[in-house]
Image 1: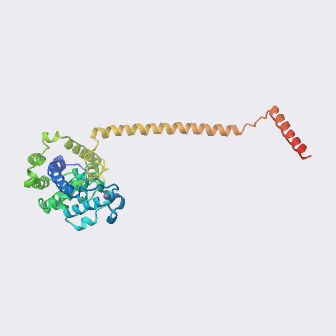
Image 2: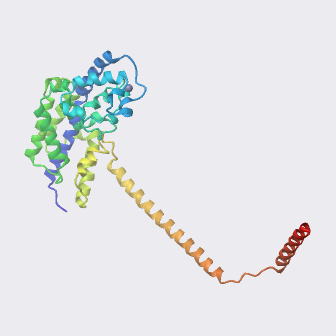
Image 3: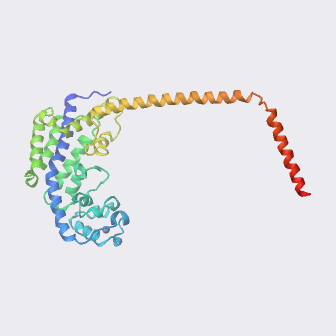
Length: 328
Ligand SMILES: [Zn+2]
């Protein structure tokens, strides 16, 4: 087991928490802007309603799409920045039928990887960065360099950091690039961003995670996941992508079991294993008994009941006799 320097492990935890606080902090800015954009498009495309869910049914055979879905696609296309992104949209993973009713569904068009964050795409940092990069609306507000820095930070210092440790300078670098994002005036004026900026600055100032931040349920979930990763590392079970998988696949929204739940599940699994073994032993016992009983029974010579034998003979004789009678 590789010893983890506790100070450097604290730095790693701080960065993980900072990334979570960033997602929370961006919510007001992202949602307000997406809602406004959605309303504007709705006004232009309000005629008609899709009954077929064209994207799922026809994929990119756009000529077969209904006029409502085509109208939405046209409007959204005008907001798209990169042709390469637009040409690679996985339409079958999107429900165009829901575009008029859900700004979140419509925004999927601008998100590169839809496999993450099934329960709330906008709670995924990568998805948010994808929106910032691909939507013209955000591009005019957020510089591409800032997006690049955040993604690099997230990947290098967190998702692919198998050592689970960071130097003080690296932690400061990560927090700095997140703070820069929250100082952009259009973002800074929202309530969730103000809270996030304040908390990120507190994280920057202290070695440990301040008590006020620790109390947040999202932060507790994040730390529980890290504890789980730490546990795997301690027992040599930390495989490639473990951190990324734990945070960014099934548990993207931190819909994760808390550490205690994991322990309970382990206990329950042990009990299930024991019961299975007991059932196996019982089945084996019964099977052996049946086989032995069968083998022993074969040695016994069946005794015919003489009364039955006579009755059979009589009945056969009678049938033959009747047949002959009819022939004559
Ligand atoms: Zn349609």
